[in-house]
Length: 544
Image (tube, rainbow, N blue to C red; front, side, top):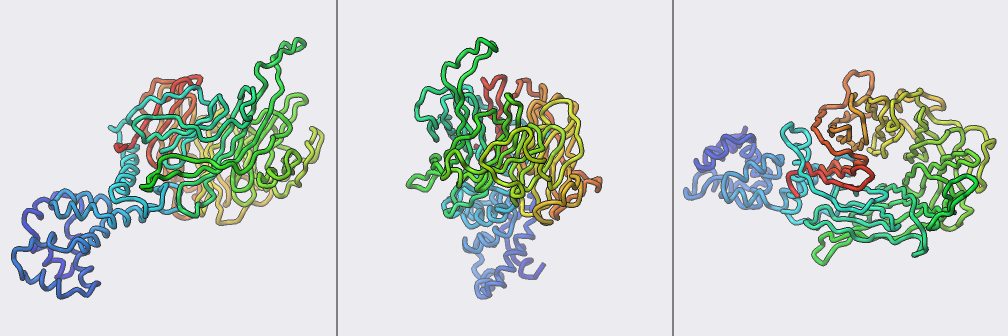
Protein backbone atom coordinates (compact mmCIF):
# COMPACT_ATOMS: atom_id res chain seq x y z
CA UNK A 1 0.00 0.00 0.00
CA UNK A 2 1.32 3.49 -0.86
CA UNK A 3 2.16 6.12 1.72
CA UNK A 4 -0.76 8.19 0.45
CA UNK A 5 -3.15 5.35 1.29
CA UNK A 6 -1.76 5.05 4.80
CA UNK A 7 -2.17 8.79 5.38
CA UNK A 8 -5.77 8.66 4.20
CA UNK A 9 -6.46 5.80 6.60
CA UNK A 10 -4.70 7.57 9.50
CA UNK A 11 -6.58 10.81 8.93
CA UNK A 12 -10.04 9.27 9.03
CA UNK A 13 -12.46 10.29 11.71
CA UNK A 14 -12.17 7.82 14.65
CA UNK A 15 -15.94 7.25 14.59
CA UNK A 16 -15.79 6.13 10.96
CA UNK A 17 -12.87 3.82 11.71
CA UNK A 18 -14.72 2.28 14.63
CA UNK A 19 -17.75 1.59 12.45
CA UNK A 20 -15.76 0.17 9.54
CA UNK A 21 -13.43 -2.17 11.41
CA UNK A 22 -15.96 -5.00 11.98
CA UNK A 23 -17.16 -4.98 8.36
CA UNK A 24 -16.29 -7.77 5.97
CA UNK A 25 -14.67 -5.49 3.39
CA UNK A 26 -11.45 -3.95 4.84
CA UNK A 27 -11.14 -0.20 4.66
CA UNK A 28 -7.57 -0.58 3.38
CA UNK A 29 -9.07 -1.32 -0.03
CA UNK A 30 -10.92 2.00 0.04
CA UNK A 31 -7.74 3.84 0.99
CA UNK A 32 -5.74 2.11 -1.71
CA UNK A 33 -8.30 2.99 -4.37
CA UNK A 34 -8.56 6.59 -3.17
CA UNK A 35 -4.78 7.09 -3.32
CA UNK A 36 -4.58 5.54 -6.80
CA UNK A 37 -7.33 7.82 -8.04
CA UNK A 38 -5.61 10.91 -6.65
CA UNK A 39 -2.42 9.97 -8.44
CA UNK A 40 -4.20 9.01 -11.67
CA UNK A 41 -6.12 12.29 -11.78
CA UNK A 42 -2.93 14.25 -11.09
CA UNK A 43 -4.83 16.20 -8.44
CA UNK A 44 -1.86 16.60 -6.11
CA UNK A 45 -2.90 20.06 -5.02
CA UNK A 46 -6.14 18.73 -3.56
CA UNK A 47 -4.30 15.73 -2.16
CA UNK A 48 -1.72 17.86 -0.35
CA UNK A 49 -4.50 20.00 1.09
CA UNK A 50 -6.14 16.84 2.36
CA UNK A 51 -3.10 14.82 3.47
CA UNK A 52 -1.07 17.54 5.20
CA UNK A 53 -3.92 18.32 7.56
CA UNK A 54 -4.48 21.85 6.23
CA UNK A 55 -7.94 22.61 7.44
CA UNK A 56 -8.09 20.39 10.55
CA UNK A 57 -11.91 20.43 10.65
CA UNK A 58 -12.19 18.11 7.64
CA UNK A 59 -13.26 14.55 8.45
CA UNK A 60 -10.84 12.54 6.31
CA UNK A 61 -12.49 10.39 3.64
CA UNK A 62 -15.88 12.02 4.09
CA UNK A 63 -14.41 15.40 3.10
CA UNK A 64 -13.66 14.21 -0.41
CA UNK A 65 -15.96 15.51 -3.16
CA UNK A 66 -18.93 13.27 -3.98
CA UNK A 67 -17.54 12.65 -7.46
CA UNK A 68 -14.30 11.25 -6.03
CA UNK A 69 -16.15 9.18 -3.44
CA UNK A 70 -18.25 7.76 -6.27
CA UNK A 71 -15.13 6.74 -8.18
CA UNK A 72 -13.75 5.07 -5.06
CA UNK A 73 -16.95 3.09 -4.47
CA UNK A 74 -17.06 1.99 -8.11
CA UNK A 75 -13.91 -0.02 -7.42
CA UNK A 76 -15.72 -2.09 -4.76
CA UNK A 77 -17.98 -5.10 -5.13
CA UNK A 78 -21.64 -4.68 -4.27
CA UNK A 79 -21.17 -6.13 -0.77
CA UNK A 80 -18.49 -3.51 -0.05
CA UNK A 81 -20.75 -0.70 -1.22
CA UNK A 82 -23.49 -1.86 1.18
CA UNK A 83 -20.93 -2.15 3.97
CA UNK A 84 -19.67 1.41 3.48
CA UNK A 85 -23.29 2.63 3.49
CA UNK A 86 -23.60 1.65 7.15
CA UNK A 87 -20.85 4.00 8.39
CA UNK A 88 -22.14 7.56 8.10
CA UNK A 89 -24.58 9.80 6.25
CA UNK A 90 -21.96 11.13 3.84
CA UNK A 91 -20.82 7.70 2.66
CA UNK A 92 -24.41 6.46 2.61
CA UNK A 93 -25.22 9.23 0.15
CA UNK A 94 -22.23 8.30 -2.01
CA UNK A 95 -23.21 4.62 -2.00
CA UNK A 96 -26.57 5.55 -3.57
CA UNK A 97 -25.05 7.51 -6.43
CA UNK A 98 -26.23 6.33 -9.84
CA UNK A 99 -22.72 5.87 -11.36
CA UNK A 100 -21.92 3.36 -8.60
CA UNK A 101 -24.86 1.09 -9.48
CA UNK A 102 -24.48 1.58 -13.22
CA UNK A 103 -20.93 0.27 -12.87
CA UNK A 104 -22.03 -2.69 -10.71
CA UNK A 105 -24.86 -3.66 -13.06
CA UNK A 106 -22.63 -3.37 -16.13
CA UNK A 107 -20.11 -5.71 -14.54
CA UNK A 108 -22.79 -8.38 -14.01
CA UNK A 109 -24.87 -7.77 -17.15
CA UNK A 110 -23.12 -9.66 -19.92
CA UNK A 111 -25.54 -10.28 -22.81
CA UNK A 112 -23.59 -13.35 -23.95
CA UNK A 113 -23.95 -15.04 -20.54
CA UNK A 114 -27.34 -16.81 -20.19
CA UNK A 115 -27.15 -16.56 -16.40
CA UNK A 116 -26.31 -12.85 -16.30
CA UNK A 117 -28.62 -10.13 -15.02
CA UNK A 118 -31.18 -9.16 -17.72
CA UNK A 119 -32.69 -5.67 -18.05
CA UNK A 120 -35.97 -5.06 -19.85
CA UNK A 121 -35.08 -1.44 -20.63
CA UNK A 122 -31.85 0.36 -21.63
CA UNK A 123 -29.75 1.08 -18.57
CA UNK A 124 -29.97 4.83 -19.26
CA UNK A 125 -33.71 4.69 -18.42
CA UNK A 126 -33.15 3.38 -14.88
CA UNK A 127 -32.82 5.63 -11.85
CA UNK A 128 -30.21 4.77 -9.22
CA UNK A 129 -32.72 3.20 -6.82
CA UNK A 130 -34.23 1.11 -9.64
CA UNK A 131 -30.83 -0.30 -10.64
CA UNK A 132 -30.02 -1.09 -7.02
CA UNK A 133 -33.38 -2.81 -6.53
CA UNK A 134 -33.08 -4.93 -9.70
CA UNK A 135 -29.54 -5.98 -8.86
CA UNK A 136 -30.14 -6.78 -5.18
CA UNK A 137 -33.29 -8.69 -6.06
CA UNK A 138 -31.24 -10.90 -8.38
CA UNK A 139 -28.56 -11.47 -5.76
CA UNK A 140 -31.02 -12.07 -2.92
CA UNK A 141 -32.70 -14.82 -4.93
CA UNK A 142 -29.31 -16.50 -5.44
CA UNK A 143 -28.64 -16.36 -1.70
CA UNK A 144 -32.11 -17.69 -0.78
CA UNK A 145 -31.75 -20.50 -3.33
CA UNK A 146 -28.64 -21.82 -1.61
CA UNK A 147 -29.40 -21.02 2.06
CA UNK A 148 -30.75 -23.93 4.12
CA UNK A 149 -32.88 -21.72 6.37
CA UNK A 150 -34.53 -19.63 3.62
CA UNK A 151 -37.97 -20.51 2.32
CA UNK A 152 -39.82 -18.71 -0.47
CA UNK A 153 -42.74 -16.36 -0.04
CA UNK A 154 -46.00 -17.84 -1.33
CA UNK A 155 -48.79 -16.07 -3.21
CA UNK A 156 -51.97 -17.49 -4.70
CA UNK A 157 -52.46 -17.00 -8.42
CA UNK A 158 -56.05 -16.84 -9.69
CA UNK A 159 -56.25 -18.10 -13.28
CA UNK A 160 -59.14 -20.04 -14.81
CA UNK A 161 -57.77 -23.31 -16.28
CA UNK A 162 -55.01 -22.00 -18.56
CA UNK A 163 -54.08 -24.16 -21.54
CA UNK A 164 -50.44 -23.03 -21.43
CA UNK A 165 -48.31 -20.62 -19.37
CA UNK A 166 -44.84 -19.15 -19.90
CA UNK A 167 -42.67 -16.81 -17.81
CA UNK A 168 -40.96 -14.11 -19.87
CA UNK A 169 -37.22 -13.82 -19.28
CA UNK A 170 -36.75 -11.68 -16.16
CA UNK A 171 -39.72 -13.24 -14.36
CA UNK A 172 -41.99 -10.18 -14.32
CA UNK A 173 -44.46 -11.05 -17.10
CA UNK A 174 -46.50 -14.24 -17.26
CA UNK A 175 -48.03 -15.28 -20.60
CA UNK A 176 -51.31 -17.22 -20.36
CA UNK A 177 -53.04 -19.13 -23.17
CA UNK A 178 -56.73 -19.19 -22.25
CA UNK A 179 -59.60 -21.56 -23.18
CA UNK A 180 -61.17 -18.61 -24.99
CA UNK A 181 -58.35 -18.73 -27.55
CA UNK A 182 -56.63 -15.52 -26.44
CA UNK A 183 -53.12 -14.99 -25.12
CA UNK A 184 -53.13 -12.83 -22.00
CA UNK A 185 -50.38 -11.55 -19.76
CA UNK A 186 -50.02 -10.71 -16.09
CA UNK A 187 -47.57 -8.42 -14.28
CA UNK A 188 -46.36 -10.55 -11.34
CA UNK A 189 -44.55 -7.57 -9.78
CA UNK A 190 -47.82 -5.71 -9.29
CA UNK A 191 -49.55 -5.63 -5.91
CA UNK A 192 -52.84 -6.64 -7.54
CA UNK A 193 -52.52 -9.35 -10.21
CA UNK A 194 -54.70 -8.59 -13.24
CA UNK A 195 -55.01 -10.66 -16.42
CA UNK A 196 -54.66 -8.39 -19.49
CA UNK A 197 -55.52 -9.44 -23.09
CA UNK A 198 -52.52 -9.44 -25.45
CA UNK A 199 -53.34 -11.53 -28.56
CA UNK A 200 -56.96 -12.04 -29.71
CA UNK A 201 -58.68 -15.27 -30.62
CA UNK A 202 -57.19 -16.33 -33.99
CA UNK A 203 -60.53 -17.55 -35.32
CA UNK A 204 -62.14 -14.08 -35.34
CA UNK A 205 -64.93 -14.89 -32.94
CA UNK A 206 -66.13 -17.99 -34.81
CA UNK A 207 -67.93 -20.65 -32.83
CA UNK A 208 -64.86 -22.78 -32.09
CA UNK A 209 -63.88 -24.87 -29.11
CA UNK A 210 -60.17 -24.45 -28.33
CA UNK A 211 -58.74 -27.91 -27.74
CA UNK A 212 -55.00 -27.35 -27.57
CA UNK A 213 -52.41 -24.55 -27.57
CA UNK A 214 -48.64 -25.02 -27.93
CA UNK A 215 -46.31 -22.10 -27.26
CA UNK A 216 -42.62 -21.40 -27.92
CA UNK A 217 -40.59 -18.20 -27.36
CA UNK A 218 -37.49 -16.92 -29.14
CA UNK A 219 -35.16 -14.24 -27.73
CA UNK A 220 -32.54 -14.49 -30.51
CA UNK A 221 -33.76 -11.30 -32.22
CA UNK A 222 -32.21 -8.17 -30.68
CA UNK A 223 -34.21 -4.98 -30.26
CA UNK A 224 -32.75 -1.83 -31.88
CA UNK A 225 -33.87 0.16 -28.83
CA UNK A 226 -32.59 -2.34 -26.21
CA UNK A 227 -36.13 -2.74 -24.89
CA UNK A 228 -37.49 -6.18 -24.04
CA UNK A 229 -38.59 -7.80 -27.29
CA UNK A 230 -39.10 -11.42 -28.30
CA UNK A 231 -41.09 -13.58 -30.70
CA UNK A 232 -43.68 -16.13 -29.66
CA UNK A 233 -45.10 -18.97 -31.76
CA UNK A 234 -48.60 -20.29 -31.10
CA UNK A 235 -50.04 -23.53 -32.50
CA UNK A 236 -53.79 -23.55 -31.86
CA UNK A 237 -56.12 -26.49 -32.43
CA UNK A 238 -59.86 -25.82 -32.45
CA UNK A 239 -62.97 -27.81 -33.26
CA UNK A 240 -66.61 -27.10 -34.00
CA UNK A 241 -68.65 -26.81 -30.84
CA UNK A 242 -70.37 -29.10 -29.96
CA UNK A 243 -68.48 -32.07 -31.49
CA UNK A 244 -70.39 -34.65 -33.54
CA UNK A 245 -71.02 -38.24 -32.41
CA UNK A 246 -69.76 -41.13 -34.59
CA UNK A 247 -72.23 -44.00 -33.96
CA UNK A 248 -70.07 -46.56 -35.80
CA UNK A 249 -67.02 -46.08 -33.58
CA UNK A 250 -68.84 -44.69 -30.52
CA UNK A 251 -66.39 -41.76 -30.55
CA UNK A 252 -67.09 -38.05 -30.41
CA UNK A 253 -65.65 -36.52 -33.59
CA UNK A 254 -65.53 -33.06 -34.97
CA UNK A 255 -63.68 -31.30 -37.81
CA UNK A 256 -60.60 -29.59 -36.44
CA UNK A 257 -58.77 -26.45 -37.53
CA UNK A 258 -55.05 -26.01 -36.89
CA UNK A 259 -53.39 -22.60 -37.08
CA UNK A 260 -49.75 -21.54 -36.63
CA UNK A 261 -48.96 -17.94 -35.70
CA UNK A 262 -45.83 -15.94 -34.95
CA UNK A 263 -46.10 -12.70 -32.97
CA UNK A 264 -43.58 -10.10 -31.85
CA UNK A 265 -44.01 -9.05 -28.22
CA UNK A 266 -42.65 -5.66 -27.15
CA UNK A 267 -42.51 -3.65 -23.94
CA UNK A 268 -44.85 -0.68 -23.47
CA UNK A 269 -43.51 2.42 -21.67
CA UNK A 270 -45.31 5.36 -20.09
CA UNK A 271 -44.20 9.01 -20.32
CA UNK A 272 -41.85 8.43 -17.38
CA UNK A 273 -40.09 5.65 -19.36
CA UNK A 274 -41.41 3.00 -16.95
CA UNK A 275 -42.69 -0.35 -18.22
CA UNK A 276 -46.47 -0.59 -17.96
CA UNK A 277 -47.36 -3.58 -20.13
CA UNK A 278 -46.79 -5.60 -23.30
CA UNK A 279 -47.94 -5.16 -26.90
CA UNK A 280 -48.14 -7.69 -29.75
CA UNK A 281 -47.62 -7.45 -33.52
CA UNK A 282 -48.56 -10.35 -35.78
CA UNK A 283 -45.71 -11.45 -38.06
CA UNK A 284 -47.19 -14.59 -39.65
CA UNK A 285 -50.32 -16.72 -39.65
CA UNK A 286 -50.82 -19.87 -41.72
CA UNK A 287 -52.64 -23.22 -41.43
CA UNK A 288 -50.97 -26.34 -40.13
CA UNK A 289 -51.52 -29.09 -42.69
CA UNK A 290 -52.65 -31.79 -42.43
CA UNK A 291 -54.98 -31.29 -39.45
CA UNK A 292 -53.35 -33.73 -37.04
CA UNK A 293 -52.32 -33.96 -33.39
CA UNK A 294 -49.36 -31.66 -32.67
CA UNK A 295 -46.92 -32.96 -30.03
CA UNK A 296 -44.23 -30.30 -29.73
CA UNK A 297 -43.34 -26.82 -31.00
CA UNK A 298 -40.09 -24.85 -31.31
CA UNK A 299 -39.28 -21.37 -32.65
CA UNK A 300 -35.84 -19.97 -33.53
CA UNK A 301 -35.16 -17.10 -35.90
CA UNK A 302 -37.07 -17.43 -39.16
CA UNK A 303 -37.95 -21.12 -38.66
CA UNK A 304 -40.61 -22.95 -36.71
CA UNK A 305 -40.53 -26.70 -36.03
CA UNK A 306 -43.25 -29.06 -34.84
CA UNK A 307 -43.97 -32.78 -34.50
CA UNK A 308 -47.29 -34.23 -35.54
CA UNK A 309 -48.91 -37.66 -35.46
CA UNK A 310 -51.90 -39.02 -37.38
CA UNK A 311 -53.72 -42.19 -36.35
CA UNK A 312 -55.61 -43.16 -39.51
CA UNK A 313 -53.33 -44.22 -41.10
CA UNK A 314 -50.70 -44.16 -38.38
CA UNK A 315 -48.10 -41.62 -39.45
CA UNK A 316 -45.71 -39.19 -37.73
CA UNK A 317 -43.17 -36.64 -39.00
CA UNK A 318 -41.09 -33.78 -37.56
CA UNK A 319 -41.50 -30.67 -39.71
CA UNK A 320 -39.36 -27.51 -40.06
CA UNK A 321 -40.86 -24.49 -41.83
CA UNK A 322 -39.57 -21.04 -42.79
CA UNK A 323 -42.49 -19.08 -41.37
CA UNK A 324 -41.59 -15.92 -43.32
CA UNK A 325 -42.22 -17.81 -46.58
CA UNK A 326 -45.23 -19.72 -45.26
CA UNK A 327 -46.97 -16.43 -44.52
CA UNK A 328 -46.67 -15.49 -48.21
CA UNK A 329 -47.46 -18.88 -49.81
CA UNK A 330 -50.47 -19.91 -47.71
CA UNK A 331 -51.37 -23.61 -47.39
CA UNK A 332 -48.86 -24.77 -50.03
CA UNK A 333 -45.78 -23.61 -48.17
CA UNK A 334 -42.65 -25.82 -48.48
CA UNK A 335 -41.58 -27.94 -45.51
CA UNK A 336 -38.55 -29.93 -44.40
CA UNK A 337 -40.06 -33.27 -43.27
CA UNK A 338 -37.63 -35.57 -41.47
CA UNK A 339 -38.37 -39.27 -41.87
CA UNK A 340 -37.01 -42.14 -39.83
CA UNK A 341 -37.83 -40.72 -36.36
CA UNK A 342 -41.03 -42.15 -34.94
CA UNK A 343 -43.35 -39.92 -32.94
CA UNK A 344 -40.82 -37.59 -31.26
CA UNK A 345 -42.25 -36.10 -28.10
CA UNK A 346 -39.85 -33.14 -28.12
CA UNK A 347 -38.39 -31.08 -30.95
CA UNK A 348 -35.89 -28.24 -30.44
CA UNK A 349 -34.41 -25.93 -33.06
CA UNK A 350 -30.68 -25.20 -32.65
CA UNK A 351 -28.33 -22.67 -34.27
CA UNK A 352 -26.66 -23.70 -37.51
CA UNK A 353 -29.91 -25.02 -39.14
CA UNK A 354 -30.03 -28.02 -36.79
CA UNK A 355 -32.92 -29.68 -35.01
CA UNK A 356 -32.80 -32.03 -32.00
CA UNK A 357 -35.44 -34.76 -31.62
CA UNK A 358 -36.31 -36.98 -28.67
CA UNK A 359 -38.30 -40.03 -29.77
CA UNK A 360 -38.33 -41.83 -26.41
CA UNK A 361 -35.31 -44.00 -27.22
CA UNK A 362 -32.68 -41.66 -28.59
CA UNK A 363 -31.67 -38.01 -28.83
CA UNK A 364 -30.94 -37.28 -32.48
CA UNK A 365 -29.64 -34.12 -34.18
CA UNK A 366 -30.29 -33.42 -37.87
CA UNK A 367 -29.26 -30.73 -40.31
CA UNK A 368 -32.70 -29.94 -41.68
CA UNK A 369 -31.28 -28.13 -44.73
CA UNK A 370 -29.99 -31.52 -45.87
CA UNK A 371 -33.62 -32.69 -46.09
CA UNK A 372 -35.24 -31.48 -49.35
CA UNK A 373 -38.28 -29.25 -49.04
CA UNK A 374 -41.61 -30.52 -50.30
CA UNK A 375 -45.20 -29.31 -50.40
CA UNK A 376 -46.92 -32.71 -50.49
CA UNK A 377 -47.32 -34.86 -47.41
CA UNK A 378 -45.48 -38.19 -47.30
CA UNK A 379 -46.92 -41.65 -46.74
CA UNK A 380 -45.51 -44.33 -44.47
CA UNK A 381 -43.64 -45.77 -47.47
CA UNK A 382 -42.06 -42.46 -48.43
CA UNK A 383 -38.39 -41.68 -48.62
CA UNK A 384 -35.49 -43.32 -46.84
CA UNK A 385 -34.69 -42.09 -43.31
CA UNK A 386 -32.72 -38.86 -43.10
CA UNK A 387 -29.03 -39.05 -42.11
CA UNK A 388 -28.51 -37.63 -38.59
CA UNK A 389 -25.52 -35.54 -37.58
CA UNK A 390 -25.34 -37.42 -34.29
CA UNK A 391 -27.44 -39.72 -32.14
CA UNK A 392 -27.38 -41.00 -28.59
CA UNK A 393 -27.21 -44.53 -27.35
CA UNK A 394 -30.50 -46.13 -26.35
CA UNK A 395 -31.91 -44.87 -23.06
CA UNK A 396 -34.12 -46.46 -20.48
CA UNK A 397 -36.70 -44.88 -18.24
CA UNK A 398 -39.32 -45.69 -15.63
CA UNK A 399 -41.62 -42.83 -16.59
CA UNK A 400 -42.42 -40.47 -19.44
CA UNK A 401 -40.83 -37.27 -18.15
CA UNK A 402 -37.37 -38.04 -19.47
CA UNK A 403 -38.80 -37.92 -22.98
CA UNK A 404 -39.38 -34.20 -22.56
CA UNK A 405 -36.33 -32.20 -23.60
CA UNK A 406 -35.93 -28.76 -22.03
CA UNK A 407 -35.82 -25.59 -24.10
CA UNK A 408 -32.27 -24.97 -25.36
CA UNK A 409 -30.12 -22.42 -23.57
CA UNK A 410 -27.56 -20.69 -25.76
CA UNK A 411 -24.13 -19.34 -24.82
CA UNK A 412 -21.36 -18.25 -27.22
CA UNK A 413 -19.46 -21.49 -26.69
CA UNK A 414 -22.15 -24.12 -26.01
CA UNK A 415 -25.81 -25.03 -26.22
CA UNK A 416 -27.42 -26.74 -23.20
CA UNK A 417 -30.55 -28.89 -22.96
CA UNK A 418 -31.70 -30.94 -19.99
CA UNK A 419 -33.56 -34.22 -19.66
CA UNK A 420 -34.38 -36.99 -17.18
CA UNK A 421 -33.39 -40.59 -17.86
CA UNK A 422 -34.40 -43.26 -15.33
CA UNK A 423 -34.48 -40.77 -12.39
CA UNK A 424 -31.08 -39.31 -13.28
CA UNK A 425 -30.88 -35.74 -14.53
CA UNK A 426 -28.54 -34.99 -17.42
CA UNK A 427 -27.45 -31.99 -19.46
CA UNK A 428 -26.88 -32.39 -23.17
CA UNK A 429 -23.94 -30.07 -23.98
CA UNK A 430 -23.18 -29.12 -27.58
CA UNK A 431 -19.85 -27.40 -28.16
CA UNK A 432 -20.64 -24.62 -30.63
CA UNK A 433 -16.99 -23.58 -30.98
CA UNK A 434 -16.21 -26.75 -32.93
CA UNK A 435 -18.61 -26.12 -35.78
CA UNK A 436 -22.26 -26.54 -36.60
CA UNK A 437 -22.45 -30.29 -36.19
CA UNK A 438 -20.76 -33.62 -35.75
CA UNK A 439 -19.82 -36.28 -38.28
CA UNK A 440 -22.68 -38.51 -39.30
CA UNK A 441 -23.57 -41.31 -36.88
CA UNK A 442 -21.24 -40.00 -34.14
CA UNK A 443 -22.37 -40.84 -30.61
CA UNK A 444 -23.44 -38.24 -28.07
CA UNK A 445 -20.51 -38.21 -25.69
CA UNK A 446 -17.83 -37.24 -28.18
CA UNK A 447 -15.74 -34.09 -28.13
CA UNK A 448 -18.40 -31.81 -29.65
CA UNK A 449 -21.63 -33.23 -28.19
CA UNK A 450 -21.93 -35.12 -24.93
CA UNK A 451 -24.07 -35.62 -21.85
CA UNK A 452 -23.16 -34.48 -18.34
CA UNK A 453 -24.76 -36.05 -15.27
CA UNK A 454 -26.25 -33.58 -12.79
CA UNK A 455 -27.83 -35.65 -10.01
CA UNK A 456 -29.88 -38.74 -9.12
CA UNK A 457 -33.19 -38.77 -7.32
CA UNK A 458 -35.26 -41.40 -5.53
CA UNK A 459 -38.40 -39.29 -5.72
CA UNK A 460 -41.24 -39.84 -8.10
CA UNK A 461 -40.71 -36.90 -10.44
CA UNK A 462 -43.75 -34.89 -11.48
CA UNK A 463 -42.32 -32.00 -13.55
CA UNK A 464 -38.77 -30.62 -13.95
CA UNK A 465 -37.90 -27.10 -15.12
CA UNK A 466 -34.32 -26.11 -15.93
CA UNK A 467 -32.33 -22.89 -16.32
CA UNK A 468 -28.69 -22.22 -17.14
CA UNK A 469 -27.46 -22.40 -13.53
CA UNK A 470 -30.53 -23.48 -11.56
CA UNK A 471 -33.40 -25.94 -11.75
CA UNK A 472 -36.58 -26.59 -9.80
CA UNK A 473 -38.09 -30.06 -9.84
CA UNK A 474 -41.54 -30.95 -8.60
CA UNK A 475 -41.46 -34.37 -6.97
CA UNK A 476 -44.00 -36.26 -4.91
CA UNK A 477 -44.53 -34.11 -1.78
CA UNK A 478 -41.24 -32.23 -2.26
CA UNK A 479 -39.56 -29.53 -4.29
CA UNK A 480 -35.96 -30.14 -5.32
CA UNK A 481 -33.75 -27.13 -6.01
CA UNK A 482 -30.54 -27.58 -7.99
CA UNK A 483 -27.70 -25.17 -8.59
CA UNK A 484 -24.85 -25.99 -10.94
CA UNK A 485 -22.03 -24.13 -12.67
CA UNK A 486 -20.29 -24.62 -15.99
CA UNK A 487 -16.55 -24.23 -16.67
CA UNK A 488 -15.44 -21.09 -18.45
CA UNK A 489 -13.70 -23.06 -21.15
CA UNK A 490 -15.72 -25.00 -23.68
CA UNK A 491 -16.20 -28.73 -23.72
CA UNK A 492 -16.67 -29.75 -20.06
CA UNK A 493 -15.61 -33.38 -20.02
CA UNK A 494 -17.95 -35.91 -18.41
CA UNK A 495 -14.93 -38.13 -17.73
CA UNK A 496 -13.27 -35.51 -15.53
CA UNK A 497 -15.11 -36.78 -12.44
CA UNK A 498 -16.05 -33.22 -11.52
CA UNK A 499 -19.78 -32.80 -12.21
CA UNK A 500 -21.14 -29.25 -12.41
CA UNK A 501 -23.67 -29.72 -9.58
CA UNK A 502 -22.69 -27.58 -6.58
CA UNK A 503 -25.91 -27.60 -4.56
CA UNK A 504 -28.98 -29.73 -4.04
CA UNK A 505 -31.67 -28.56 -1.67
CA UNK A 506 -35.02 -30.19 -0.87
CA UNK A 507 -37.93 -29.02 1.22
CA UNK A 508 -41.37 -30.57 1.78
CA UNK A 509 -44.20 -29.38 -0.41
CA UNK A 510 -47.48 -31.21 -0.08
CA UNK A 511 -49.40 -29.86 -3.06
CA UNK A 512 -49.47 -32.07 -6.14
CA UNK A 513 -47.78 -30.07 -8.92
CA UNK A 514 -48.55 -30.77 -12.56
CA UNK A 515 -46.78 -27.75 -13.99
CA UNK A 516 -43.60 -25.87 -13.05
CA UNK A 517 -42.17 -22.78 -14.73
CA UNK A 518 -39.51 -20.57 -13.22
CA UNK A 519 -37.12 -17.72 -13.92
CA UNK A 520 -33.67 -18.03 -12.40
CA UNK A 521 -32.89 -14.32 -12.73
CA UNK A 522 -35.46 -13.23 -10.14
CA UNK A 523 -35.96 -16.54 -8.31
CA UNK A 524 -39.65 -16.80 -9.16
CA UNK A 525 -41.46 -20.13 -9.54
CA UNK A 526 -45.05 -20.66 -10.74
CA UNK A 527 -46.60 -24.00 -9.78
CA UNK A 528 -49.81 -25.48 -11.17
CA UNK A 529 -51.83 -28.02 -9.22
CA UNK A 530 -53.97 -30.98 -10.24
CA UNK A 531 -55.81 -30.38 -13.55
CA UNK A 532 -54.32 -26.84 -13.56
CA UNK A 533 -57.12 -25.61 -11.29
CA UNK A 534 -54.89 -24.04 -8.62
CA UNK A 535 -51.72 -22.02 -9.05
CA UNK A 536 -49.08 -20.74 -6.67
CA UNK A 537 -46.23 -18.21 -6.96
CA UNK A 538 -43.03 -18.86 -4.99
CA UNK A 539 -40.65 -15.90 -4.69
CA UNK A 540 -37.16 -16.77 -3.46
CA UNK A 541 -36.03 -13.15 -3.66
CA UNK A 542 -36.43 -11.13 -0.47
CA UNK A 543 -37.29 -8.04 -2.55
CA UNK A 544 -40.47 -7.44 -4.56
